[in-house]
Amino acid sequence: MKVIDRYEYRTVAKEAHEEIVEKKSRFIAHVKPVDNEEDALSFINEVKSKYWDATHNVYAYVIGNNNIQRYSDDGEPSGTAGIPVLEIIKKEDLQDVVVVVTRYFGGILFGAGGLVRTYGKSAKEGIHKAGIVVMRLCDIVNITVNYTLLGKIQNEISNAGYIISSTVYEEDVTLSVCVPITETNFFIDNMINITNNRVSIKKKEQRYIKINAT
Image 1 (tube, rainbow, N blue to C red):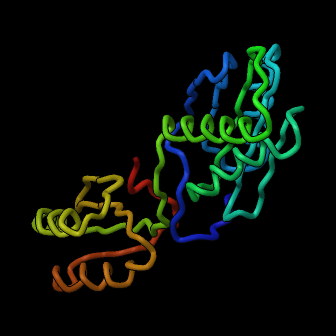
Image 2 (cartoon, rainbow, N blue to C red):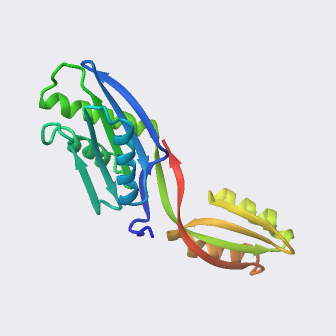
Image 3 (cartoon, rainbow, N blue to C red):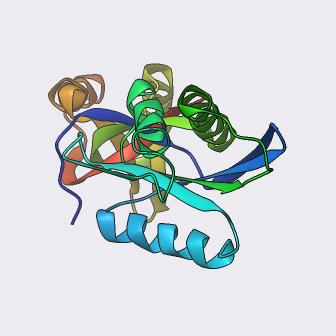
């Protein structure tokens, strides 16, 4: 089970890869959102297996609110590969993400500074290709109302910027609404007020909801 340790965090939106070429060396950044360390390690092994003939498969990942941070230079000089990738993840303030940078050596030496810059650049390009998304911890609140109040409720929810995750039409209508946990009490009070208490409200669960992407 995912440990809820932040009201809001940033991660990547999707799995992606991006390739750059520097001094005839190919650098391929593979990026993926993950839920736990086991998923990160599985992805790393998957990339290593696919690119078994690469010179290096450097990686870094962050799980949770910086609770788990790991990296590997995979044969590159110490501190020139894994750490630069990890630093890009941290600079972007990301968590629950793994980045593997595959390198095919092109015959031209970089030097330590060149490796640091290029691995960092490759990781950054891969992350931007994957896109950055903000995840916000929300209460899933079920609201059950008479059909005569549906339009009013929907307008109020829409104007406030909340997300309706599902709508069930039965004798009455039940809306499942994603409400940031810091706003739940206000939201419930407001629903009661605008319906003159003609509403049934129940909090169901907490879940991280995607609210923004770049």
